Image (cartoon, rainbow, N blue to C red; front, side, top):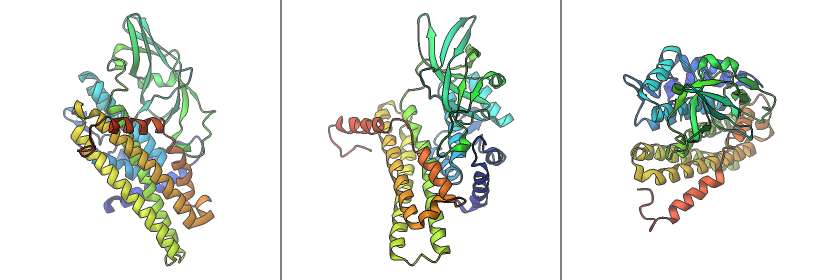
Length: 371
């Protein structure tokens, strides 16, 4: 649950989230609050510039806290953290110094945009160390507000290529075409996850991060799922809090059926916290051990799956307890329901569980599966 000292901060985030719950409205006030509190640079060390090591549990606690107040803000903040980690993993020393200093000096907001359709991004060699972009990305959360987005695309070279990470310089974002017409979601409206067309943008060699195909390197790619799972768990905690408050305020706390449902939600939330904390500890213990890559990937894929299921069940139990009021504005549960239902639609859920089964069945025994 939220640190008592941070409750006024979270309460203010919640108030802002209610105001931001409109189509086309970025959670500007929320991010002003996060910037003022130093959260944009929190994952980083300043001297030397680097991603703070062995801080996974602390980072997940912050993601959970933001998610408990605003899932759109949590989604965008998680993308910011993801981008900083990718730069730290695959960027050069000069790239880290430049981009991380942007966070400290200018409170710059980063993001990662990878999703695309048939008109996806191609990075074509243009000579003289330059590259021409063609194509679009979908579901670009924070569109129009992210100063330094990391995007991926097919790098086309004479001698090969691959799936390349690159950074769009802040000064070139004004030339990226924004298409908001298809963003008509059930929830997460304030994440402003628009389609962005990068055709015509020219990049330099210094804008490319890491070698081709670094983006999908494990355990970092699948391991990132623990971050969005933490944001989702924050929403489950908010569901418990709002249900608890409603039942007490409406003199329904003595109903035995309400007690059972509330107990079930409490069990689900505590289960989520146990999984998140264990995943955080395993990440810090195994992330730099290549021989543990498959194990860590499998464990985090289990974590994201458990989180998805317990969030769905928490919503269902809460709605049975509160009734129709939980699905009517301005009750907070109505917004949480819409946003969480949408945010739970993460890619590849079956593939995630298949990878777990593949790992488990590939072991000679199960007594030391997660040791």
